[in-house]
Image 1 (tube, rainbow, N blue to C red):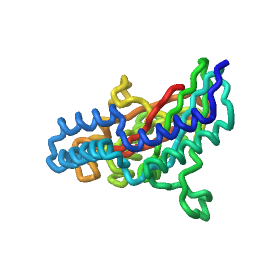
Image 2: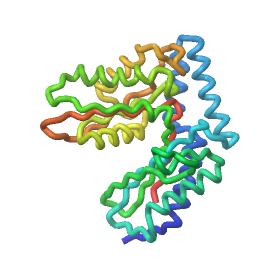
Image 3: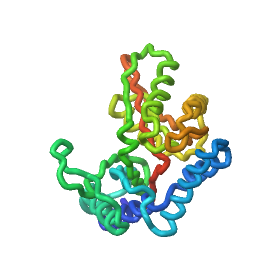
Image 4: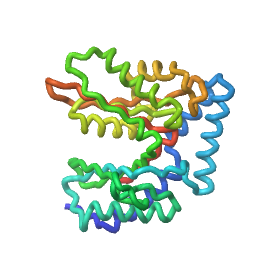
Length: 273
């Protein structure tokens, strides 16, 4: 068995919070540069150029890519041969607070969702999975709520035609319109239960933009980009950079589908201990 201390987890998560919020993912930046090269609408091209420049300034000057530094979502894959020395969740939340304070990031979490109250840095939303290894993989996804607020989920009948599902996904982006800061990365979860489909949709955002795409993903991206919402909602060819779909087996009586949209500042960082 391999021992990993709570202190090591805290230090790692702190570093991931800083990296995710200050340095735009390489695949996202690359997709933006490709979109800039392909865009023919002058205004849209100018907006994409500004987005790319914003990412450069954030990286060089060590500033947040976006003022909304999100609700921290942490994905942890714990090897079966790993022993965590200390309180795992507490170590993660301590790391988030440390990282956010160090980088002067905004505190956005209210303790009570109804009465609200003063904003703070924690707690994070933590998803834990077990794998066959002697390692611990940690991913921090700071999810801004301009785009999180545009999430949608629908329980289709198991007899639903694929065209209905396509329409729902495209319409979710249409409803989001300019409000979630396009160009988007669209995460889709299909299967499981209502809650699990939503988790799959968020997990889909962690996939590299240029990962191998299915026929359905390619088709949906084409339909979404024909909406002409464009960068920041002012028109253009690039409403979305990618559509990523994750699926899971489901019950014979249902067909859950969820959409989780990310703004152009899709931020995440990963470390393996």
